[in-house]
Amino acid sequence: MDEQQINNVKNSSQQFLAEKLEFEKIISGFSSKFISLPWKQIDDEIDSSMKTLVEFLKFERGTLLELSESGDDLIVTHQYAKDGIRRTSGSYSSKDSVPWFHSQLMNGKTIILSKPEDLPIEAVKERELASKINFKSSITIPFSVGGKIAGALGFNTESFDIEWHDELINRLKFVADIFATAIARKNNESKLERLQERLKAENIILKNDIKQDYTFENIIGQSDTIKYVLYRIQQVAPTNTTVLIEGETGVGKQLFAYAIHSMSKRKDQPMFKVNCAALSPTLIESELFGHERGSFTGADKTVKGRFEVADGGTLFLDEIGELPLNLQAKLLRVLQDGEFERLGSSQTIKVDVRIIAATNKVLKNEIQEGRFRKDLYYRLSAYPITVPPLRERKEDIPELISYYVKKYSREMGRNIESISKAMIDKLIHYSWPGNVRELENVIERAVVISQGNTLNIVEEFKHESIDSDSLKTLEENEKSYIIKVLEKTNGRIEGKSGAAELLGINPSTLRSRIKKLGISSNRSFLNAS
Image (tube, rainbow, N blue to C red; front, side):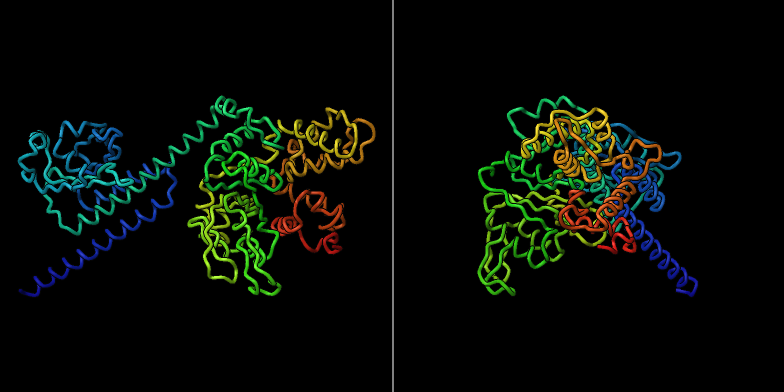
């Protein structure tokens, strides 16, 4: 071999290696892109990927086929063909028209043809078809979803032959798996979206399915948004499914948790509550899982945790977003296996507890910030329920006013029978950053100060009207309102008539909001506190 030949071999090897690396880069790009792609963009991305593959590998046509629900037909869903190459579309009965081909695919076998003559003798109809259409080489790779054949990825040529080597076949199989996973996600997410849209649109379902024999104690309202929440509760209550209740502070998440429990098979057992934000990390672990004597300073006796005493019943974990990371792994284990150990013990305890969790945080954001475990989120959110803020169910405000006026009039021995329409309108147009809890506190204070039988409300609401010409964002309104309340209390957060009490929220929650909203600690009223 002369020097020229050696250089040719070397150049050929280098080119082969470069092309191989480029192909791996293309496949890796597919894998990364489809993982995070919104489902509505998946079809367009498959089209783009098919074009990339056909052009890079110098094929002439690439086709993605999906199997019909009956399993008899193949549907061309994506195809890219070079100029001058015949295109196909629609669906055809592969079971009847190409039975050997159909059988091979349904048995999960890749069909590799370097030339039409490679078709076996038993492929009679396939041979007839091959004689009618112009094709040289082809490969068809079946793919599965959920253990069942769902379609196939195929490539072919019409003007030249291809020798299909094992490395290329294996990489194309990997591409088929990437497409299959993306298609499965697209189908599942589109079905879920259609279901959600149908449930929201069909008000008749919501109205008829909220049966009168169910009593949702203290859940007031007839708005469609509340009816939808109650409908969701009725669906999940009889099961043992973990429920995640999401919603802003003050919307009444605990009431909805009690509604789920009271309609469940566990209703004769108690529902225990743990506020994950109210205790230190050590105390919250002991509260949930119990502790042995001597496990920490002050542990002078063995104490059962809430999981243990709630065995057979329900445990409500409020403000789950505040649970420390080290305890999230322990909670995940209980959700998965129903097992845990007390603090200071190695003995495993097994329990049967239904979990209802609640949060006013966006847990997906907490995951991104590294404050919440993704695997725990997916366990907790098996059935999420979102409670709407009061500003999104304004039609319920008059009924809520009536309910709280009657409640506190009865408790205080008052005889309040009326409230002016102007005041009701003012309350309806207020944005209620503290939601139902804030409304309840306003009505309670009004009952206290009212003389005679007419409700007298002295709070100013104009600055929070969401119908004002200078409309602010919700966060700006909340910040403005908190500042005004802090000014009113001279910066005092806790205690009787403190800002937290006036807002109807926990002091720790208020401090967190002050920090998040950027309310400066240099303000005189905060320095005073």
